[in-house]
Length: 559
Ligand code: TEU
Ligand code: CA
Image 1 (spheres, rainbow, N blue to C red):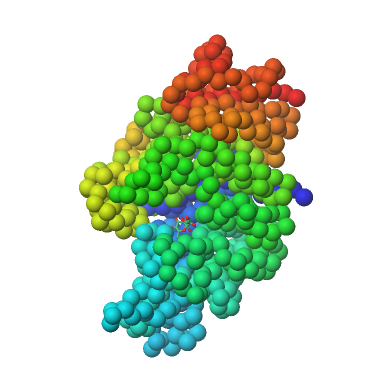
Image 2: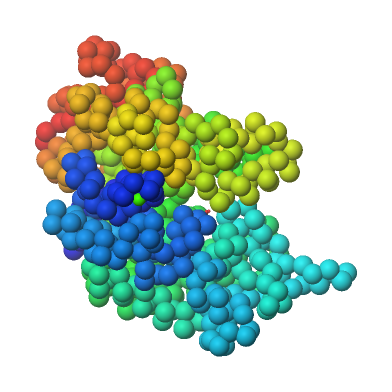
């Protein structure tokens, strides 16, 4: 049976950076409401809002202090109700970000948990994960040597308890203990609260880490001891049965590192866990394993195009007919896609359009990340102080300890840090890019004078116009349910596929790299007409087999 969420087009809003409505330099709910029409005009109909809850903002709101309160930075509960009403009035849906894995250390639960003299300590202690120190040669040691996702140790010592608590993200984000029934009960209450307010779904944050290996063995970094463990699925099923299914919500689970083997368990039609999955299969296909100064995702290398294509193909195959797929290029945890897989300098426009063409005619539910539709690029910050992300500062220290110079470390941050995708939305070429009347919470990218919404609305050939056409084509022709055939998965430069839609076929041919190349049509081109392209039409028609830097074309054939 077809579900409503199979037909949506999602637009992800990083609330803090989308639109400031009250002139304090921070994006907020009234600002978002004032921009709903932009999202609608683009062709999206569902907004995923990054965390809007009360928070000390150690990790921009993924560290929640009060699940039932809106952060004063973003507005009030009434503003949130107004957002839902304004969206619904326009036929749009609202998905909120929900963090099940951890809270802020400033959450009252943790305040009680960490203090044996607190009147409610007995009840809340086991809301979190505590372990006694290990002692080696009279020295106090952490219970394990695990490293968390922000590059820091996963345990922090608490004096009052004389124990360590577990946190797989920052030390201000203690992990909840999902083995504790009272935790599950409390989190269900939180979910119900927002369902009653009228949200249409949840994007579940870090949703593959709920269970931990309580034997606590040493391992470095040790992800396997806190990712996708069997019991984790039990927790999700419980939520599915009691909360998600009875309310006809859309549930999007973020499961970094999930394998296609788990695909059906997470997002199969019979699964009660998620409706679709955000996995990172196609992300970071350009790392250099030889780089020891700024290792892992920070090590920029050659783009492995087959790896990207094969991930799309593999996930499509795993879920086809049996579950549902989400498609996206990037989000608030990645660099900007045009800087990452394209070229944000000389071939900015070509590569941004190429990336749009290669993604948005694939089946599944698309997620457009704010600013992607105008080709926003990585930040251009020169000083460490311009960065905001908690991860940046731990990793900067790590790079320096590995022996990298200040410049090398800064370049890694400019290329790869999450802040790249979090700079204020570029609405126009004015001083603060139309985002705010005052200095924004993080600096606006200087290129807003030529990369902005206003400019692209006025130009027929702009990237924004390409997005509008692609998304309207998608909807009209029911591309979400289309049938895709990929060509040349092993080819190091091309990204080619055929999509059979409702009444027509689309053929997408793309050069994913800068070097020009010749390519033959992978199928008989008769009946196909050029519909969208990244370079000029004449050239594309005259020399149909030659592709310039990042050149892509979409042909259409009526059936
Ligand atoms: O990110 C989660 C995240 O990146 C890991 O859980 C991921 O599964 C792992 O890296 C896989 O290798 C989410 C948010 O998107 C991010 O912004 C937050 O900082 C984080 O959770 C903590 O809430
Ligand atoms: Ca504001």
